[in-house]
Length: 87
Image 1 (cartoon, rainbow, N blue to C red):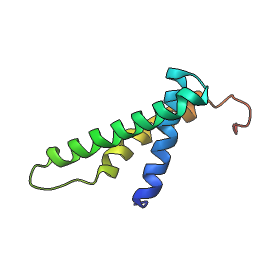
Image 2: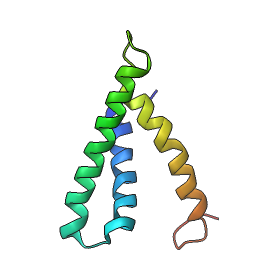
Image 3: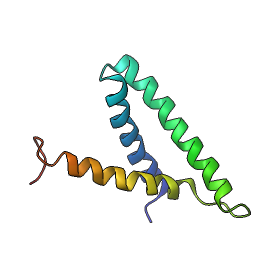
Image 4: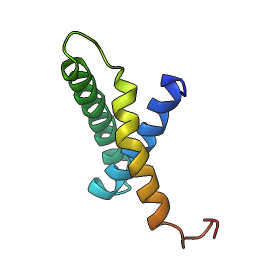
């Protein structure tokens, strides 16, 4: 299992990618919106991780990996024909 900082770092990239589609590429809006959405993702993942198995705590990284893995595969699949992508 990868360490939690690597998992969180990759999910920050996912959040930035999705936020760019929502608010545009202008950094004055992108950076604050990415920070808010990233914090919201981690708060929700932590809340769900604490309540799913009530007496036990599930690491938040497990839930974010469960969400981010399929999202990464989706982005990889939809961007195959773009410049710089391997064919």
